[in-house]
Image (cartoon, rainbow, N blue to C red; front, top):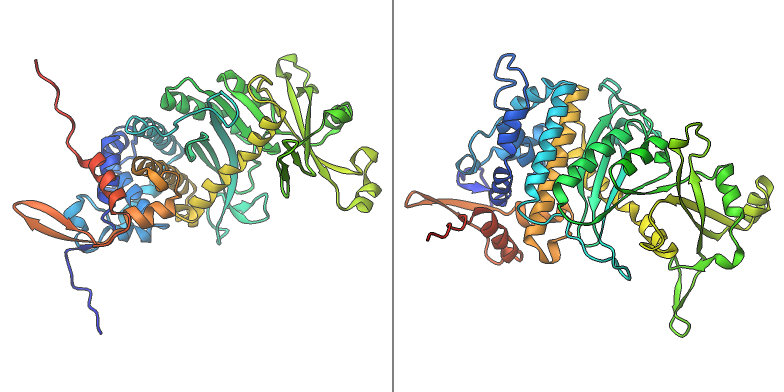
Length: 468
């Protein structure tokens, strides 16, 4: 057995053809060309922004996690399938020309690109929650530290997890039927506090969501205690959304918890819970209850005060001796986890609100996907180049989610890695016949039907207009 790299008509990522046709139909290159005004400072560094951004997205979709990885687009017969395939050095030079203003322009491209992807397939299909008639879109905000290994990278610092890196703040949107898409992103210094600039990004993200969904669905913004802020609450409510945010156990919260009647606690489905079919109740150590609460009441401006519900979950404290030595009797038996919400009781009762809020952890799935893909590295030493890389990564994520939605079936909610392995990185041999390109794909490919569904959606000619 031997080998040689001598076949010019092979490609390793034939699935990029329908995927990038979706991007073309959504106007990715056109939007970037029109809106990103990077100056041409020589060697065409700023020229052809549309084609270069498209190349970055295509490379990330194929699995590139660094500038050097963009060479995935330049092998075998790839130049027969795509034109303007740029060298990694050219793409890196382009990103290094970005300023803060150019990153904002690219973020605007991302917002409009997402809205256009939403016209190709419903990215956020809504339906009634289990046991409830309300249709909801859940918006989650959280940050993550992308580790870097050189202190020379601009903006690198020790983040909240004691890791040197850059801080990526993301806003996602999902429904009970749809996996999360990214509706907002911002790269910050590694030592940035989680809530820094969150209210502004939320406002922009909710505006993007408004252009995308086009459906009569309630919007609920979920966040952890780092985002328990009057500015964040004001941004959410100003955009006609509801808030569900974890609260720190400060004196006001503890005082409110103390007023909850012991008969108000309800057993819930939780870790190691058992359903008693005879009584139709949960046998569980965890319980929930709620009490009326005014958030941010310590603010001098009454306009900052927000009335709502304080939903509290309690579980037995296992280390009673240690806890009793440091706290009063109220917290000597239970550990309390509370969140504040403006969702009316008529929409979600106590148990449903608690379950919904705990699903905020879905944003960690997005963090994991990005870190297993394009955010495995921050490729440049320049902060704004990395900020632009983050925006390109979010556009790629949304393009992959569009692909998964179109493919449907078992892959409709699949993660990016699965979509890449089963739909995108399909090997093919290119043949030329009667002035047409034909891709010969492997026989016995298990996901051939899903690939065909994507191909027909992306490359079928538009329906002819009826003539009278």
